[in-house]
Amino acid sequence: MSLYELPKINIPKIKISMPKMSESGKEAFGRVVLIILISAVFGFSAGAGGGILAYFQIEKYLGSLNSTDSANQEPAQVYIPETSQENAVIAAVKNVSPAVVSVIVSKDMPIFEQYYYNPFGDLGPQFQIPQYRQNGTEKKEIGGGTGFIISKDGLVLTNKHVALDKEAEYTILTNDGKRYPAKILALDPVQDLAVLKIDKEKVLDGDGGFTLDYFPIVQFGDSDNLQNGQTVIAIGNALGEFRNTVSVGVISGLGRTITASAGQNFSEILEDIIQTDAAINQGNSGGPLLNLKGEVIGINTAMASGAQSISFAIPINKAKKDVEQIKNLGKIVYPFLGVRYVLINENIKKEKNLSVDYGVLIANGSAGEPAITAGSAADKAGIKEGDIILEFSGERIAIDNSLAKIIIKYNPGDRVSLKILRSGKELSVDATLGERTE
Image (cartoon, rainbow, N blue to C red; front, side):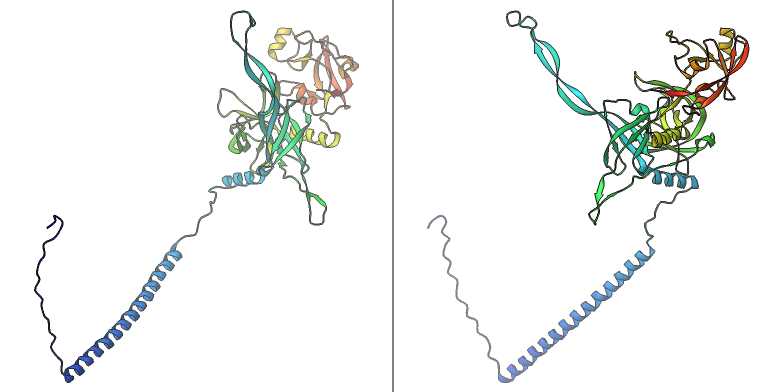
């Protein structure tokens, strides 16, 4: 027997016999089977019907629960401002934001590559000195700021220091993400203001003609009636990255005079401007300062470095004249008297041994520039070095009412009267203002 062969087992055969059933037994057995079948059918039908009824009853019950939950559930709430001031801020931002734009400054910049050269040539020691040389140019973004659209045909107001580079290209990025090439129409020679122009693309209408959609614009307010503590809203392209950034503050001061600079090549004195604690960061320059009506009352211009919550804006009324001149003359012009002067105060009075503590003293420049510009209105009127101009067309010249602040109200060609103190005697002269060039 193999190892994997099972032993044979003899299993005895078992005989099973079924008892025979009589005819009457067969009939009784059939009736029993029939009764069982009928009971099974009725039981199945009753069970199925009961199950279906129970299913629909449960479904109806669960549906009623869901309906009750839905009825009790509150609809999604739309945010409702808590105060009237908050509501005014939200409405102002919503209305003005479409007209606020980002100003992108681009320029072709040189590409430099590194190379090595041996100053001793091939015959000398093998030295490799790194050098750099230009290998073409590439267009790069070199700066940016903010502006806002002031006319439906695409005039944009911004800061002059944003648009100073005459070799650069300027692109306007609107709030809906569209880009428009911009050209500089004018730079204000006195204030930090510039006017740019963009053009809307013509769209072909259903009749085969061209239509021109207008740009959204801001509304001007009145900056002559501002109050300290008044709520203001600043909108701008903060840090050149965060478009239409909103900050809220108050007017902290009025009639401020500051010296503002943008880099090493640009500096100017700004007079009679607005101070605010609304956050104005780099990139906000040229953006609008709004009142709670959503009207522009200022142009965001500068922030105090090394300080917190001290920012400045040019009053919008100073820009209104620029806008009107651009529309009517195509340029920004300023009156020109043609004098160099020192504004007189108590210290200047003592230092120069003067008889008055107000007005301006006509004097040469610090580098020896002449006190009177040849051929100017002052030269033609006979004004001389050492004269003191006390009044300009009836307005007294003082620290809080400078000659520059007064003369800006006039236009080239206007005839004005000047009260002058010369050698201790007062006299009156007339002058016809010229036109200032940049």
